[in-house]
Image 1 (cartoon, one colour):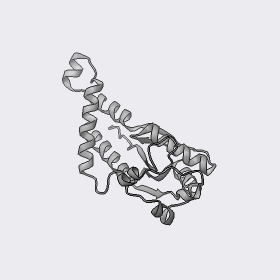
Image 2 (cartoon, rainbow, N blue to C red):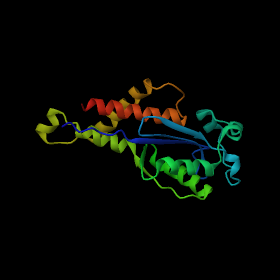
Image 3 (cartoon, rainbow, N blue to C red):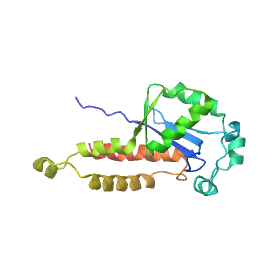
Image 4 (tube, rainbow, N blue to C red):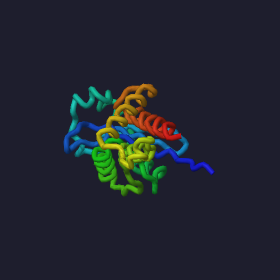
Length: 189
């Protein structure tokens, strides 16, 4: 009987900056059915959230005005995340940043996170490393970390070609991670 690998769930945040006092402005995650849920976060609801980098805004294209008009209250976003993500592990390609922004969101919302994060590139690398070439099996050696990084970078570039939308928007970035997983999974079949 063929073992079916379940597609992991992915998450991504966009933020006010990359500074230590930055905060989340957008979050997106994938669900088991392959759909992606995305929400802008109303940063005006939290008085201590003052950090803003115009350069970051140029990259993600999200203005403070847009967040004010279309963003949801941070407490609502945190509660929604717990509602659909409890007991799940979500993979991200920016583990430290995304975990920090998620914790910042939940602290500001006075909520507890009922889900966990994992590093997508680590999981992707393990999956690729399991797909041994005949040479690796015969020589009983694993793929070098440099070679693995090069493979993942190449797969990342391939995945971006399959994604419509602006990079550095949370939903688009989650779709790119799904595409990376699909390329890696299909490579192993």
